[in-house]
Length: 245
Ligand SMILES: [Zn+2]
Figure 1 (tube, rainbow, N blue to C red):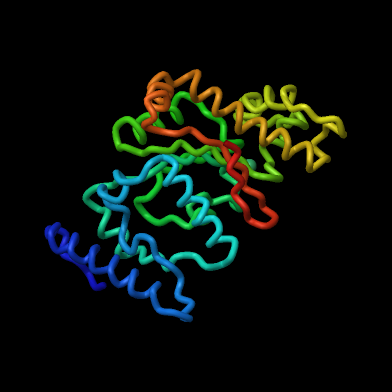
Figure 2 (figure 1 turned 180 degrees about the vertical axis):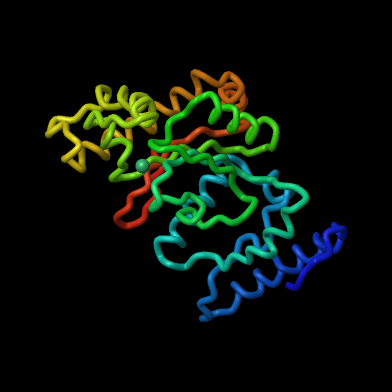
């Protein structure tokens, strides 16, 4: 697909449909191991609106399976950029850690225009993150709020070890309630990887509780069945995004 003029929505839509058809054709060739491509261009409003929150979660699980198997979609970022430059219809908003090894869009094999992404050390919520999520769901129509923690999280470890540094100290304080709340019978220290991971998991659950408590907007959308708020843990070893609810 070569350069598209910016002012030709009808032609863009047609090209998108054509791309989707060629994808169907491509994946139908028996014995030919071409990666599957769900959305050759960016996600359209029609595609997003047809999906339920459960459909979106299922598609994330499939995307993560492709990532784990090394069979990711062939992302045509130029086509995705061009298709989304006049509007976006993302299916979800993801809150994850800044950890360089945990980029949600890659782990879930999604492209430009498919997810909103908020990243902060230790995937905690605050007013600005909640405001972003409210925009994503109540204004832009996203149907899933996905909180993603990960194993071997340095922020969680720092909170357990009472690390102190500038503004980081205050951020780590927001993770600390998850330490006390974690039921764990072994060594409760930052040196114990299993304990760090257990606290990270509790932290995801507490972040979700905080989202419901501090955002009446999101809580109402969830109660109306318009969105789902779910937690997950990304395992650095193996690459699984484990959905917790
Ligand atoms: Zn982390």
